[in-house]
Image 1 (tube, rainbow, N blue to C red):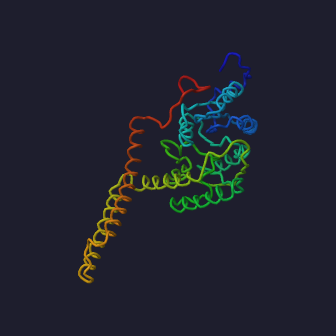
Image 2 (cartoon, rainbow, N blue to C red):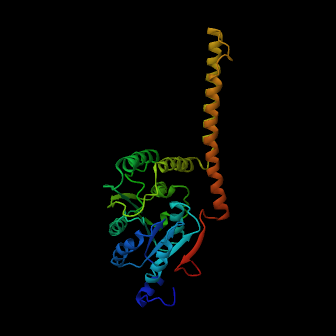
Image 3 (cartoon, one colour):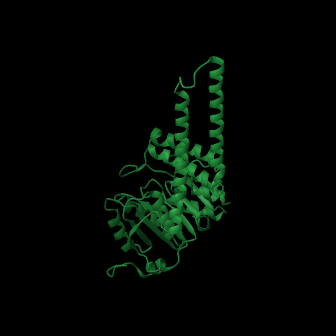
Length: 335
């Protein structure tokens, strides 16, 4: 805290207490949105009657976002800010916030003003009723109808059917968690949206509730159609880890059996052509082409899964998180 700070004594006392609520906000190039976000967020948090902290992770912004955070930290000691040296992605920013959050209840929120802070008390009330995870549902979503809404609905349907955890809106950042469901959880890629799936698989009670959604005021969305593909691929990785991490031979053995079966059928068909129609096996390149494409696809998929295993082994064995912190504000030496 700077010496020339004019923060009231009672505010300093609240910041030094162990908070009852942690609000985590990932930020990337939101210089214009942050002041308005604070104007909406802090009246809501002040009215909760709880001690709280706001953990803001600047994901390597290239605008003046961190300068805004520096000024805000002087005025509100409840803010604890982290700046990444480079852009590492929203999942890494979420993971960094979870790592340093101190409260038994955690709420995640976007910084672009599309989530409404006034919905936070509603999520907390749902937690008080016995839920472990409360996921926001942008029922009346204010985004592009085709490029965002339709694609999102298709992706959410696929994710729900594959995972068995049926939610309308996995992509909504506005969520509330009991801290114990996040203990030991490590997130990579685009997997922050899959926390309700992880939690449900661990026996947590997951509920969903409609929340307000506003059109973006400043800047442009950081998400494109290519992100949907990444999300689906990450989902396959999660399914693999949930079902086959301790028994990967089931996957490799299953694929191997399919390959052997395919090879046997292809060989039998070539013998059929040879002895029934007199067709020489080397007269057509189709068997070779099909075999090569099939093998390349299988090898690519297996190499991808092996790479996922190796990268997790690397991070977890070294205790090395997938992000680098360049600066912290309003942290103590022990944090």
